[in-house]
Image 1 (cartoon, one colour):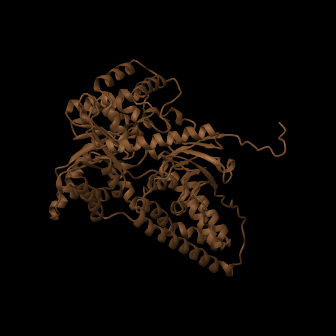
Image 2 (image 1 turned 45 degrees about the vertical axis):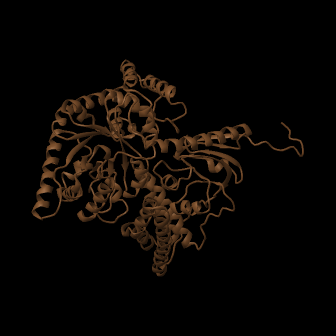
Image 3 (image 1 turned 180 degrees about the horizontal axis):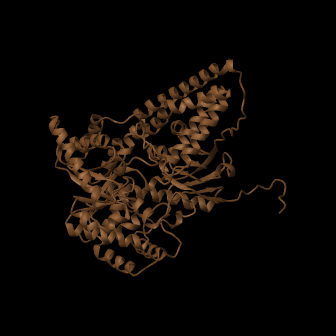
Length: 602
């Protein structure tokens, strides 16, 4: 088609799908943050200049450390502890002497300049983290990448800053935590990046700042220009570049509807969480940091169903002492009293790295390896320290202890012996504690499903972790793009396993809850109610929506759904039944990519 002179060029509407990282719908102009693409050749230096290059590297690290520390302090004051923790992780990397020594050794050993040595060592570290199977640690690769850029920028005497002349949606290959915080001060409308996952720093910071964001778009920085009009739908992960006028009107209406729905959901979260036929369901929150408690209380959660203690150790160079741990656990318990707080013991080992703890071996398959209680049963001293801290925090009797990665009865008996030993040591030392504590185990390995009746006689409660249970039961690594589509908690085998676990808990008259992703999927809630779950624990952000679903269904109709599903043998058919049931009762309620079902007919 020939365009006549003076005729306006109509830009084509482009739709991209990424990973929803922070909810919200925004229509506005794009600002493309173009970062330099660096590829350095080795630069030989004479031996007499080695010391000077090492000193330049150290000085640059110190400058970056000072910059991030400054932002860390102001962030903690203005935005809270959770967001500050993200920056603290980068500070911890900059204080890792082993890491920094590798750069210095390359300068000295190979006589390469500071810029090239920094580039190579940080790139190698980034690749190492990208190979990890745990999403959280894979996303730490981007922390290393952003630190590399900041240090090299200092070494080259350049400036690294993003300046918005007016509010816009920022597009970039990736953004460092400091970039994201600085952009928030400039009234950024939204964020969209090529890289990253739901636990990447961009996603974490965006959620903390309530800035709509999408990550993992792969090529948006190559397709968009500054000032292009765009729509960012952080609920579904969809970006529309150069939207047509009718598309803009549609999304502006969606934004208004979404904002109104969120406000109503938050308001109604104070209502009793009972089914239409008056069955009370406990809805608890999953947390990693004490700073999340304000949000937990805002949505009126019934306590903490999962306190992941790994977060306390991630930004430190050594282990927390027993006193430090006890102070944190007790602060959470006191804040939530009289509601229960379930503290899960440290799940470390394999590919979960914590400063001060080393498994000492390289494992081909760390997810099936020496991790969690398997590691700690071989390191009793460190484990006893955490157990004693938990017992000390249980002063008012509202703390429960949860053990992950249990695979058999022998482990449970050893764990109970250690809890008793921890109590005896506290008693001998005259330290205040409460040894009357409920002991629970994670139901996340298929073997425990098959002996759930025996295990239910030994513990006080079950908590189902569907993330690992689904992965192990279906032999699917959801971090592997080739098979991730097979991962679904709606697989018929998973539903049968959950039935066995609930029946075993009911037979022993102990509570059974769920703290995995399935508990945070509103579409799965009616099915879980029908199965007999009376306690669900999820991210505080989804709790208002979960509560609305519970109040909008009766146990009778949920059980009818389960009866239908029991006669189905393929995941896709189960998903179809679940969706039909849900959408008939809650049209338009669930935001975001469903993303948990599979198209495979299994």
